[in-house]
Length: 233
Image 1 (cartoon, rainbow, N blue to C red):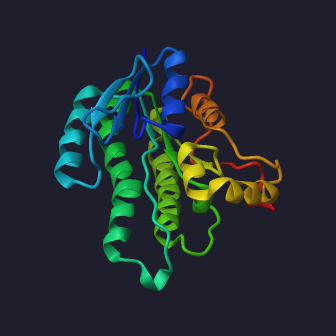
Image 2: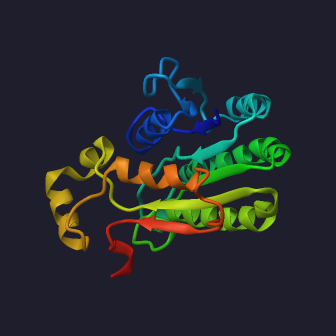
Image 3: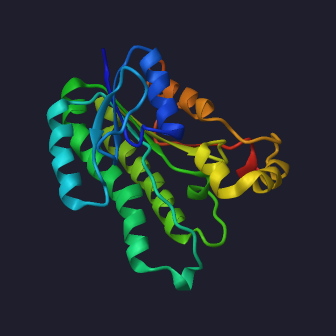
């Protein structure tokens, strides 16, 4: 049974990914920031705060010891603001969670994957790692960065049977999306998306499921937008 680590697996997209992989008989571990966090039934839980250097470094030791076959870097944060008014500490925090932690996690899982001759890495980017808009500078910086990191991973590791890809979710119908946008904002978005609806966490989970499976033998280094066509029109 292959061992999977999904960061940020207590809600939304990460929860859906963990739930899907559990159904497919993976041994699933997730992370969250709270002491009493919980993922789907059957998953194992690690508490880690990627904003805290000591917590992050301690967790990397755990990851190296566990030996994961599949890594899904899903955890992320965002803060919207005008470029000239962005607090540099907010910028640093976004990069810590969205880019630095995934970089370190990839470093931690690679030795086991190389020894096994097999591994799968999926990094959750965003449509704002492919296109962008106003007030998204720190977030887009992190998500464009994770695309570049993924391409570099593919260039270096594919010969060892390790495939690395990005998934770029568009506007996904999660509790957080509804809280931030409200019904009026969601309705406006629907009109801008060619598919005339928001995506679902399960649709992202389905794509991740194939990318980390034995069926994927040659697709690597890609940044796949799952956005109902939004980034192409």
